[in-house]
Length: 100
Image 1 (cartoon, rainbow, N blue to C red):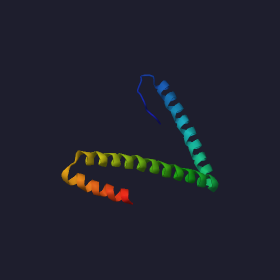
Image 2 (cartoon, helix red, strand yellow):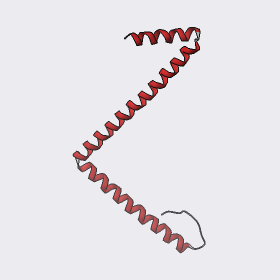
Image 3 (cartoon, rainbow, N blue to C red):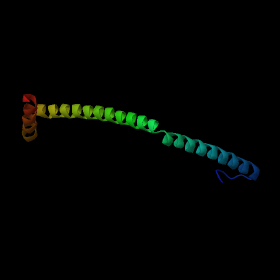
Image 4 (cartoon, rainbow, N blue to C red):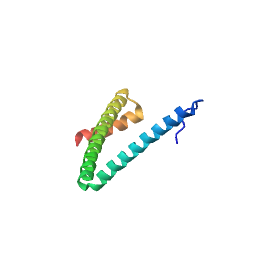
């Protein structure tokens, strides 16, 4: 079934391939049985999906917070450089945000 290396000793190779095949078979059976267990339990599917959704939401919130902070820092730096067009535009946006 599996051929990982070639030796003059075919018995060792056949034995090795047989053991690998047995391990593969056992892992396949266990994975499939676990999959069937999860599918058979709607409650378990619900909780896994619920927790995955919460984790995605928290990750998204943290990511947007970090990105927003970096953008604000970058915009403040650009305003400090006093670039003629970009600096004035960002300054106007900053004032609008601060007034609201």
